[in-house]
Length: 218
Image (cartoon, rainbow, N blue to C red; front, side, top):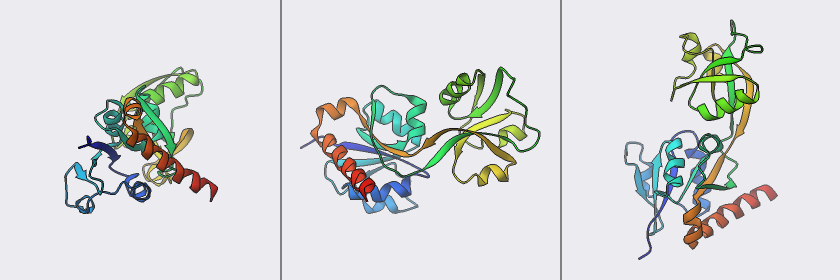
């Protein structure tokens, strides 16, 4: 009996867009997956040799990089933040589009053009430090996993780095986007070692890639 493949998918904004793409590639979760009351993290699929795990986006990358899952779907922001050497992102799925940006209070923002040091609230400290370093500034990052928009009004940090889609949440919290760091989309990711040793993974990568190629040609 073949060993199980574990496919990691993220909770949250990407999931609803990812499921139809996965289905077209033959990765279909059991019916229990769609039960909103179900708090399980692991699910069977219509394939006898595959299970799904549903975890936080940052954990998708960790599970795949360390080989606990062989494949997964995650935003390019997460890939860029961790930069795992064992992680390979062969296919842009063209879903989950948003951007990673710097935002500051609409009024009374501290001027940073001449500052050499800035304090930033973010869950992306590595990307944030690299971005401000490229601008000639040292970023002191305050790590938050949510409620980022509160940081400036409560004096925790003068600005934030976070994902932005429509900008409505920023506006509701008195913030404006001031710099775009990177555009973000969801990617298929695989563990490099598993890709070399398990032909089922290469087959699935080719299936997802073919779907992407047909989409681009349409």
